[in-house]
Length: 229
Figure 1 (cartoon, one colour):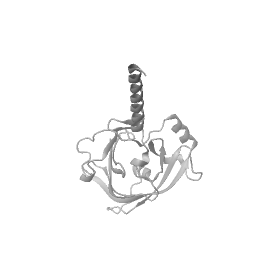
Figure 2 (tube, one colour):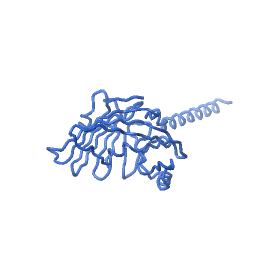
Figure 3 (spheres, helix red, strand yellow):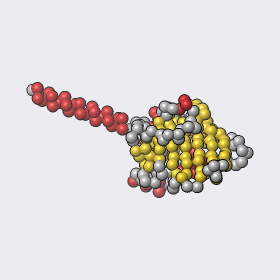
């Protein structure tokens, strides 16, 4: 091979290696980021403020979240969860709003993303509902996480857009300092008028959440207390 041909061949090999490296970095196995093995357990502290913004009603409680099973389906892997809640500090009934209720829903690991399935999971038949399958195939469902979590990355849709970006000043004040290195994910439209911040630790999962409604006052935080792989 002549010098020009050798140089061209080397350039081609370099381009292929770069392309493979880019694809590998663009998509990673979600389970290397989010440990969802059966038996994995997280304990969280929760706080919910509502009512008068200056003198809000406050509820606090703890919960234990455990992965209870896997179901393999054509669309990916369904991870079933169980949540046990302790009595809250006020002695009142723990809130059962959307943010709290979705913690009980199974995850779907699909390609390099993870979805909270919600009502799309048919527990009896161990399958996704027909409508959920159709929306998933069309790419119409916003994932909760897409890996790797790299600054500047975006996913979701207009209903629930997500981006990996630096946290706004003061929004992480409730988190312990040990989570300062967690990756911050933000949605500027998590339901009508809602902002949702999530802090994620590779190899451990969700370290914290902060939700605030920018109309009627509702503010929620969730903080990781312990993690048992």
